[in-house]
Length: 396
Image 1 (tube, rainbow, N blue to C red):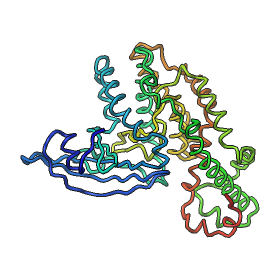
Image 2: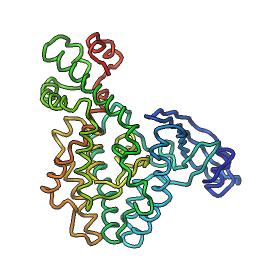
Image 3: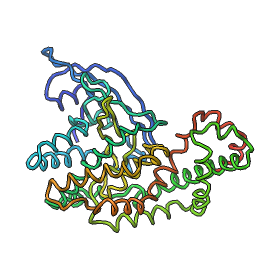
Image 4: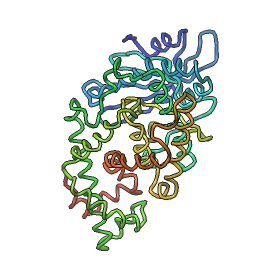
């Protein structure tokens, strides 16, 4: 790991020139277990060359959950080891697909330490002079057109790893054991995730219990009015909530059962994103997409990425109207990608087989959606928290 006195020295070393570093904007984003500070720098060459927009992503993970989950090491493996291998594999076999894959990844320049903080330097998507990208607000969902684009791009991404495994036997875990770690259930991280999942799962269950009680007993229409849900949706969730009550206090046992289904399908396991949700996907005005934040990349079933994205990136109405076609877009693109490299087709079989496997993996949406997304359906959370019934009933 190379160490530098400041960002300017790091950028000059990574970019191979002499540059003047001009800060453009600072964005301090607090995440679970860590604080990531993102800011943009403009390196301008000494001889007056064209300015380049650079995005320096800071990871100050010492003593945090992120450090224990090895997020810096995993992202380093992705950009320094995996992507070069993918590029070499595709360049020799399908230059066009190689170009397509590069387009869905953010251009990476290098990394280093400045004052004990780790920085990754990327192309700046948000202040680019060319096509500009953006990330959805945390309480919004993707438009339907964007979902189709993301599903196709994810299928190409997964398809490349299926093909590398089929042709060359690439597994990645032999050289990089960290990729075998499942952050949800790994024994080394159990003490980290247990409080979160027990607490968040129980709280979300209680919130929904209060909402349904208010709705069904008509004790407070104010509660329902603050939700982006129809009364029909609330009514339908009643039976689901009753089933979930059986698991309150034991969400990790439920997750373990779900995970056993995944590991049972080792022949299908590849390198997956591992944290595939809208805040880790940039979208342009033309619905082009880029994936980033490979901090939890791991060996697993691609259906895990699909389920996390579907439940966190789309609305119940979108899924009601379009879920089969979303999945068909993924399966068709995955099949085409695999066939290009001599595989007989999708590792999931035909579309009917794929839908059956999707259903078997659907419980993954419980940790990804139920425990994390209830706030997305509240339009006025400040008012929502003031409700006496809410304050009385929520006890975590």
